[in-house]
Amino acid sequence: MKFFITGTAGFIGYTLARRLLEAGHSVTGYDAVTDYYDVALKRARLAELAGFEQFSFLEARLEDAEGLSRALQQSEAEVVLHMAAQAGVRYSIEQPQSYISSNLVGSANLLEAVRAHQPRHLLFASTSSVYGGNTKLPFSERDAADAPISLYAATKKGGEAMAHSYAHLFGIPTTMLRFFTVYGPWGRPDMALFKFVAAILEGRTIDIFGQGEMRRDFTYIDDLVTAVIRLVDLPPVKGAPVEADSLSPVAPFRTVNLAGGHPELLMDFVQAIESALGQAAKCNFLPMQAGDPRETAADTTLLRALVGELPRTPIQAGVANFVSWYRQYYRC
Image 1 (cartoon, one colour):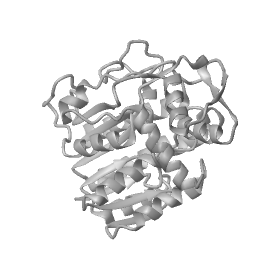
Image 2 (image 1 turned 120 degrees about the horizontal axis):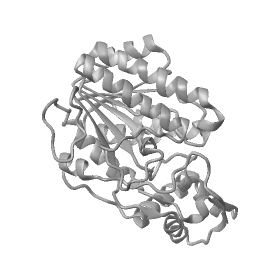
Image 3 (image 1 turned 180 degrees about the vertical axis):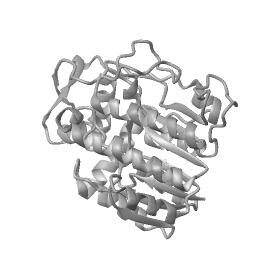
Image 4 (image 1 turned 45 degrees about the vertical axis):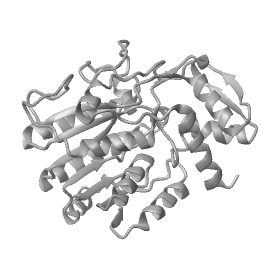
């Protein structure tokens, strides 16, 4: 098949594109290659993809509505995977305009391009952060998600709302993918795993927020990609729900949690890093940081009803894989 993937220089977009290319599909990538984090890492991901004959790439911004629409039309894609976004809870406090521009304006441009092109399925990356101030655990797709506690979460919730309206108005089958703390090789340098490994190897202290009592539903990248690819062939059909479905009553639209479904204490994650490195961490325990939930936990009943049982990589193995990649990439 032919795929159009935004965010192919990013962690999840790159890994999805690579898996699809390895399976023999064609991928058109679209990414602005911004300097939010190390551009060299993004270029390295793109260089890996460039080795595949069936990969083509356009470096451009989502805010370029005309260029985005033209690229999607030229790709002749049957499936659109919208992975591009300005990510990061904490950075949204410092640079709110970049989130408005990319996650709202850019995503609106993508929806307009999809409206004109009419692919058979749009899969749109969202986040567990949309559950915000919810206290009922685990988080279910059928729970209200109306209390975002960061601007990042608010813009992603806005993207969900816009996508639902397009699904309703123009019959675009749309699956919103709520990702829970994705980690693994080629990950983002702004995330805890990357930061912790770098600091421990350099003998620096790591900051542990929430006094180390936070829990996260960590999701290993390969497990997540497997789930997304299985969902590709399951575009929502209005009026045809499955078990525990979040299917909209007025549109071919559903939200799906993508997670390991097994929350882990942050300190257990740190211990997995120490074990993989063979080196102890020096920890600086701090209070909760603004915009961060104390715990995330996903109800994965709907995901399993749609795609069946999925592999669940234990954090010890997932962290070890990341450390192996990190040492090879940075030659340390």
